[in-house]
Image 1 (tube, rainbow, N blue to C red):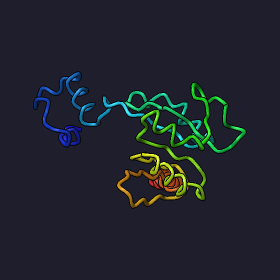
Image 2 (cartoon, rainbow, N blue to C red; image 1 turned 180 degrees about the horizontal axis):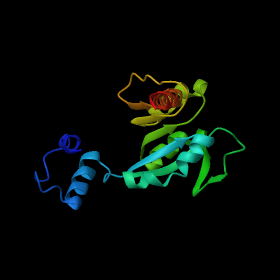
Image 3 (cartoon, helix red, strand yellow; image 1 turned 180 degrees about the vertical axis):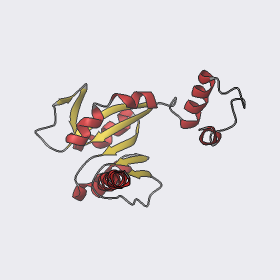
Image 4 (cartoon, rainbow, N blue to C red; image 1 turned 90 degrees about the vertical axis):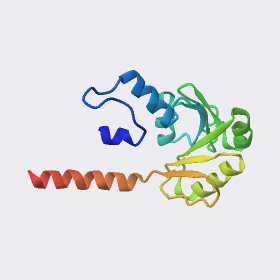
Length: 165
């Protein structure tokens, strides 16, 4: 663990350990969790609902500012404390709420179009849960979450473990 922590700088004393409060403060600064950022969730489907209800974002310095969807049956409904807004309001919401990070949880065929709408509205980073990888040429940070690959890897490790017993 000491080697992992060394990537963030030099702190702690050999043989003595770490001052936990000092370590926590240093890691928060390095990981930017003290810098608050507003995020938008695009989709009020199952993944969007799960993410909107996740309470851990606040601990990471992330504030959910809006949830949007294009489904008229979902617009106006509440997910926890968030009222689902129309995706037609995307530009205004991103501008008014000073949102820099978007979470996409739409279908594969919608993902690239939504990503470009978000970028045109001023988004600087995208966390993509759509079942397709986004390869954006603009200077945008994109993290593609490949749920298929993750579950296949988990299944492989479980099978490998069972065979080694």
